[in-house]
Length: 399
Ligand code: FEO
Image (cartoon, rainbow, N blue to C red; front, top):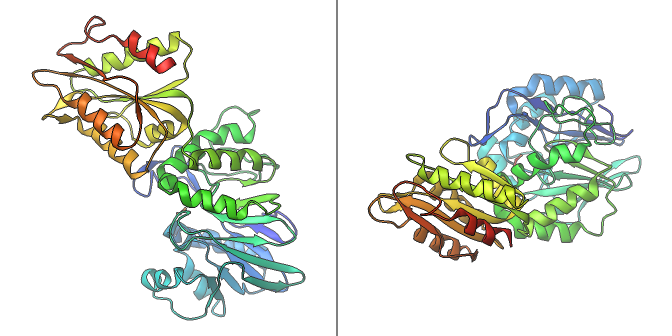
């Protein structure tokens, strides 16, 4: 698929995988993006999941014909982008791998490849001939230590690895200027970025969320580049909505939430759930933006998305074995792993004979540096508005 005279898209769409990294749901599928850059010599930038090898090679051959691919640029070693490496080497025995020193032992460890590797450093270039020059920028921990980005001089195109990527297959046009669509999205008139915003936020929070500081470092390093096209390894090629995409990454990596409440809860016998739903009604009545997630019933992926999206978290948990109920404890541990910051916090939940979950939730929130909006709303046995004043809780959350 043509992006420009010098850039071709040869990625694939995966509609079969149900959990990305074995953890995160893919209701709209996912794309593994790979690109060809044509000079006098040809470079292939990143690869795809190896199970798509035949389809992938067909796309490469369609663009290259009988010409060999001279270089494989490895921006990132996670296997969703590197696992066709061995396959590509068999198709093009003379191909040289271009990557950085941190990737070299990973290439050996994953695929047993130790030869025909060119190691580049920050700022190095690779001349493909015919005024086609690639420049390399090291961007460690966006999302692994070896991650780098590749800049095509003259085309103002950034091959960004996982950065600015999103869940969601892209089956039709791949550029946003061409009308890239999120697979399964129903509104034919939706602008590209609003429809991808939710899945991009979920992708960022689930996959990259821990690495806010490295993302900020990368954004600063690349800020002087006159970017007119971002070719990520997942999702659309961004041309028209670069400002929106970069702004979202900037805000998420600064852990800056927008006004609103992420309500999360789990419930054993429905009492903490009743408190959560009462809180939802109170927030709705006040016009406060919110999302609500039952952590016992749904994948935590969506709760992480909204914990990153909103500036406030309300967490509900019964006391269970003198602890936080396990699904809520796991959610809090995930926030800690992602080093989420800058949040306001409120806890609520039921107990039967000895409380503890609200106190423990408050302690975990304080460890994260969150601002506690109250001591929390704990109640014994069954829920009632008299025992657990969710109207008062909503007043605190709405401020
Ligand atoms: Fe899409 Fe970090 O791999």
